[in-house]
Length: 87
Image 1 (cartoon, rainbow, N blue to C red):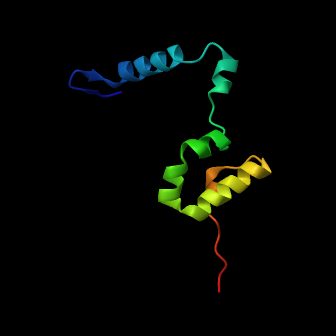
Image 2: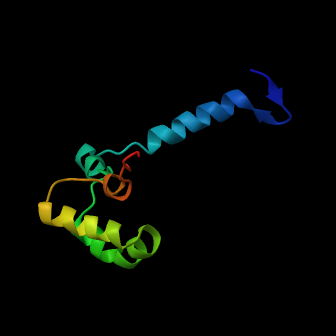
């Protein structure tokens, strides 16, 4: 590997590998609990009602409430982006 000034790329890559190894979680279950699932909850909708109304409109908020009532796992993207029928 080439050396650029005082920066040795081999040492930098080795240091990066060592740093990433130190950051690996020891508890696999704790790690799996932190993974984002992407599914919205009623708490998410209620906490962000004003934002949803302002940015996506009242129909999107209504679709969110309908998703809560159906209690099917869904993502916000599935609710917010509705395909339009072509004419």
